[in-house]
Figure (spheres, rainbow, N blue to C red):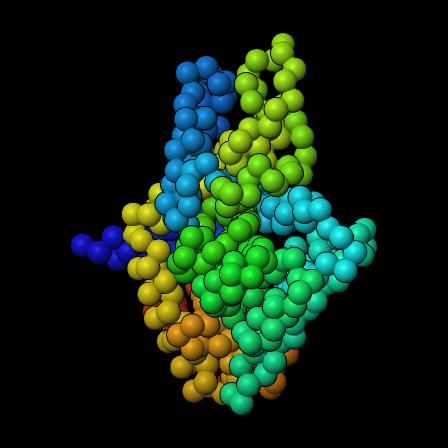
Amino acid sequence: MNPLSHYVGNADEFPILRKWRFLNHAAVTAIPHRVAQAMRQYVDEAESDSYIGADWYSKIDSLRESVARLINAHHDEIAFIKNTGEGLSLVANAIDWKSGDRIVTTNVEYPANIYPWMEVARRFGAELVLVGEETDAQGRRQVPLDKILHEADHARTRLVSLSHVEFASGQRHDLTTIGKFCRERGKLLCVDAIQSAGAVPVDVAAMNIDYLSADGHKWLLAPEAAGIFYCRRELITRTRPLTIGWMNIVNAMDFGTYDYTLKDDARRFENGSLNVAGLLGLKAAVEMFLEISIDAVAGRLKLLGGRLTAGLLERGFPIVSPREEESWSGITSFTAPHLDADKLVKTLRKEFQTEITLRVGRLRCSPHFYNTEQQIDELLQLLPPK
């Protein structure tokens, strides 16, 4: 049996199916039963025995291996962080910026991928370049690849920082092309992967990604504040930690000896005690994705998104999200010019136990692989046609 088919519509694995049509994984996910169980086990062990006899930290070491497999990295390149913004801020503070250096991003990024670079511009006189989103003949919204590459090619550009998938439009950037372009020209590529990890393939080697940051609470089906940070091995010792504590250091357990030598792998970015409960939940989620395969997940999301898009167009809702092979994602954003969109979202939640959301004037639907075709069809029936 295809491992993915076991999970589709399975309320034992995804208890939220018993109560909600939950179609908002691009916001904060509902966690699977296995993730909750992993976290409950930690709580039970901590309550009854504290750390005595627990294998929490060996499990977290195993999680490092699993995350590395998921994104095609090496476990030494993986650190754990509280959230996406922490990882992006780490990169922003790690580079020796000079006045006039350019940072290229887009004008439709989630704020976590804007404010760290605004602070660099304020402190060091760097220039923040925001490549604009455009509307094509079909009304789809995208940031053109050629314009990103044009700005990346500028002699003063030091770094390109992009969301792999844009939060409001759902556009998936062609990181393979962008990464190759940047690597050949000595530019750094930093990626916010919170809207792609767990939904579509992320391959840091094939995409020539230098830094990647993603919390686990969206498509990775994990709790909040259990995130991942990737740093390309060749950059690890040249990348300053954001904060310093006892765990960044070699021989961290030798408490009586002060040896301020940073670890030579990505653990140098972890300054102290970790979110053990959250990371054990993340471990259960990542292992599920490895069992299913991210290609199978992506195929399922493409199918659900295609069904949703066709139904929306049939009912007169303009589609914002690109659906081309190189640009689609798990997010389908659309508009409702004939309706009060905010009221619609509230009504769907209160009266029909159906959860989508509104982002920058766009209705956004983001089902995951366990959601059913029936749930997509029921959502469509709840949307008043034009």
